[in-house]
Image (cartoon, rainbow, N blue to C red):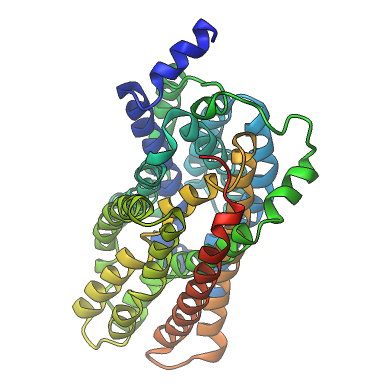
Length: 424
């Protein structure tokens, strides 16, 4: 073994590796602050630019997710071949700048173009990180490690609500966009100095697998597995629920209850969701050790079904405080799957396919969850469900269907897991 590989092996699961995980989680937090801030500022943007609920759904969801999804797959391929460090830092620089300049928008078109660039740059992040973390840590730790990283989603959303929402109330939505975009520039400089590349597959002996396989052959290999297909579909339904409630919680609290002042405080539930994501990952790893690795999918079933009663009573509550508390708690449960979803996928593909598999996964959940969810829910509110509780009826229909369908997919995935898994 070369001295370089010997040194790299010493970094696996080392204090340095945990430090890099912390830094990557901060970057993920930044990405979700910049991604979610539009939903937090939606009422102000909607009023000033005279937008419909459908247009808000397009701006928040489709304008970002369309390009994010399309770019995610080639970005994953690039991350399997080129420097993951460069892709992570470069993406961070671009999305931070685009969020900052969005603060100068004067039209819907301006915001949509900026969101396109945010989507392109953020599509480079997670595929590269998924691959990198699989080399930084032993396979038995993936549920926990990936859940710590995924917790950044909800910390970022929480910061968007608490920080961005507070700035918007004190000043306006333009100032909020400038404030949340600026810190990413400093974070990019730190990441460039700290993050190191490790040999791909170092935790599996450093072997390379797919160097002779084409882009299309890798996609075909990944999608040929039934477990992967059930995984993608099931977690897409959960993403449908997650992105929809985040896109319209401000509308629910403002239109139904006249409690716009509560919207920034919803960020506290997002912070709590970060803890539930980590707990879900630890529980998934425990069930894998106690029974078998396919049991990690159980945490997806929990996320799909356990929050539905809370959503129902929260969405149809008469009190704004009751609605706020119950919907928030339901969100903590229904979004707890995020780290587990990313971790499970790593066991189903070969080391040199991890980033591309991650890009493909993000493509699917972005199209279904982010791209379809908010616009469809917005259309249901505008055209189908009317009256004071119209938004509540639309959201409850979406959440119930998605939770049940996701759970059925996960039960199917558990049956085929053993025949589709790769070497840990």
